[in-house]
Every structure is written in structure tokens, then in C-alpha cells.
Image (cartoon, rainbow, N blue to C red; front, side, top):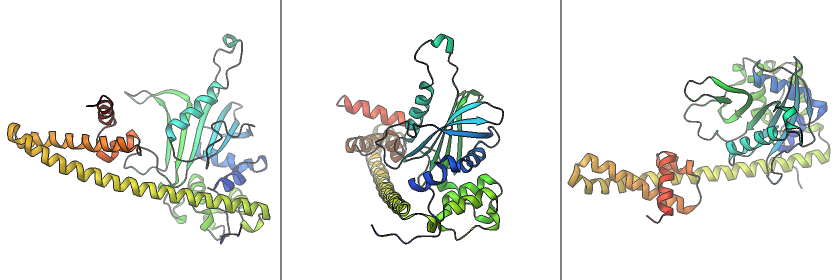
Length: 328
């Protein structure tokens, strides 16, 4: 396979680049430094151990790298972290499944009464490259730090299970705007392959090691081949994702146009009997219901995507789905 035109440094958000930088015991100081920045002082990892089951989920997934880690904090406490550079399909459910498995796997096969559910803390950390957090809304956060809390007042209910999502598409700081090491890590994760060298803004021993490790010229021939394959896979995935996003955009525009047209027609008919304003509301609802039925029949979109396309609640889409199933 011919080599691609290469930049000075590898893209460390590719599968190969992510494993090379963060996936070996030799370079675990890089991963420790990155994780400590993500925890922002809540945890300080002194050491970590790569568990043998690198991928605790489904091994059939392509474009997913998972590290299962046992970490030791500076105070001696131990906890489990799973670090992912993952695809976007069913992201939230996938992470919930992985966290549940990490918890369930701690149970002994016998004598559970003596064990008394002494569950270690579990954290899932997800590096999201090139796609947005599902249902994140309009605010462009690049770090989502999530735990179990009370719905009514927000107080933390259980602090030993957490999810940290890093949404790189929302990290837009320039090099001169970097104010802390978390900024620096996210900057190099997003921009490494386009950099020409280590600037004064990144002049720290940990980043000096990172840049030395990521030099393309230092890769062995077989490593270059693996990296090139990984880079092509990333480009292919980005192309597919871009195509899907364009398809979703067109479907959204079509759905809204159809809903508006049908709603207006139905609204006028209903308006003769009950008043124009009320009729238009009813008509729009019925028009959207018809659009939702068409989107459901296409089997191309999830419930949440259809709700977003039609600008309705997920509950409304589920109601239409149930009515459709009954033949109404």
C-alpha cells in the first residue's frame, strides 16, 4: 500500500495514534497526565494498570478503542476507568452498558454476603472526535462531566459512577488562548497532525515526550503501514458521517416544509368550524403526525432524531409510533 502524504506528526485521534500514545505501559505517564487534567482535581492518579481485557464490550465494533484501567490515587484508593476513542452509534446506551459491565464484573462468584457490594468507583471517559454529543442542545460545551444526581434539586445521589465526554468539535481555542494543561491536551489531541513543532505554549516535559513519540519519521515501516490504514479508516468514517449529516439535514428541511404545508391546509379546514387559530394548531399537529409516520416507515432514523426533525417531543413520536402500530 502506498504511503499517504504525511504531516510531521501523526494524528493521535486515529485508532493507531491513540493506542501508540496512550496504550502502553511505557507511556502511561502520558495517559495519567491527561486523565488527571480531565478530573480537574477530584482525583489525582498516581499509577495505573492496563487490564488484559482491553475491550470489555463488543469486539465487532470498528473504529472503537477501549482501555480498561485499574487506577491508584495519591491517597491509595483504587478505582476503575475505561477510556474510549469511540464511534457515535448509540453512544449513551453503549457507555451505560460498558459501565454496568465494569460494575457487574466486580461481583465474586460466591459469598456475596461477605462481599457486601464493595464496589469500586467506575468512570467512563469518552474521546469524541468529529461528532457532537447527542441531545446536547445549543450550548457548545467541550467537556461533559456527568454523574447520578437527584432530578429535583441536582444534589449528587451517587458519586462513584461518572462519565466524562470530551467533545473535540467544540474545542476551538487557538494556541495563544491556552490557559491550563487541560486546554493544552485538548489542543494537541485536535490539532497534532497539523502542527510543525512544539511551540512555547506547549513547552513542558510531558508534551515534549508526546511530540517525540508522535513524530511520523520515527515510525518503523510496519508502524507507518498500520498508521496509514488507521488514517484512511478515519477519513472514511468522517466521509460517511458527513453524508449522514447531510441526509439528516435534507430530511429535516423536507419534514418541516411538509409539516408546514399540511398544517396550513388542515388548519384552514378546521378554522371554518372552530376558528382559524385553533384550526392551524390542530392542522400542524396532524401534518407533523403524517411526516412522523413517513419517517418511521423509512427505518432510517431513531426516535430522538425524528423528534428533532419534526420539532416535537420524543413522547409525541412514541405516541404516533404506537398509533401506527395499531393501524390508526
